[in-house]
Amino acid sequence: MPPLYFAYCQGDILLTADGRIPEGEPPVAFQPWEHVTDIKAPHLCHVYRLDRPVTGRPDLQMMGLRKSFEVLSPEMYQLAGKCAELSYWDQNSKYCGCCGAPMKWDTEISKRCTECGKELWPQLQTAIIVRVTRGDEVLLVRAHNFRGTFYGLVAGFVETGETLEECVRREVREETHLCIRNIRYFASQPWPYPSGLMVGFTAEYESGELKLQRSELAGGGWFRRDKLPEIPGPVSLARRLLDDWLTNN
Picture 1 (cartoon, rainbow, N blue to C red):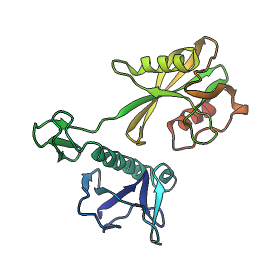
Picture 2: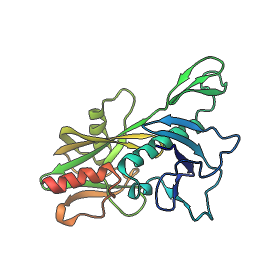
Picture 3: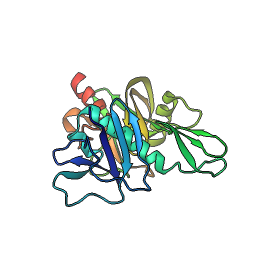
Picture 4: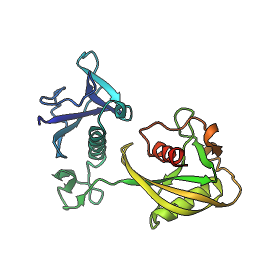
């Protein structure tokens, strides 16, 4: 298979006019100062950043990485996310955190300091997301940082020294003042915005009166399946959790 070219600019990915990853030849010439990351996962991929969005090219288009979920195959979308994460990490790991010397690529997914030899790998920000149910109701919340008008599920980042299950309990308690039980793993999802891993769980209401953490949430409550507000789109693990509840209950 010809090499694939993953080019990014300001959160967008460069695609062909018909919504594919460019292949064969670079769609835009590499800048002399730009590092091109090569990975083989599973095809040879060249990853680089653009100084400015590509415009005026009828054969090419810029598209938000999240929106590209709608046009790329699941496998290609996941690969595009991996390449975006590596590109972001490359931008933010130019110098050694120990001695300040320049870092140099050592393998496809690691760097080594040119002075002290410290090795560095991309770091993931692990977050949980949980579907909490109470009988035939589901807990939905709307965070201040949500774009649009949809309601989603309680979510948050895992803290140092904390298990995933402990994080689930803490986030639900902090954001809603509720206690939960029967925490069960559901699925996980790479979330390259910019470098996350979302781990999904289900749980059941145990006790407490709903009281929203207003510093984090703009709204929330218990919803029945026939009176759901707008919910997240299919790209998200939140939607998979909700679709599973709607289908199996």
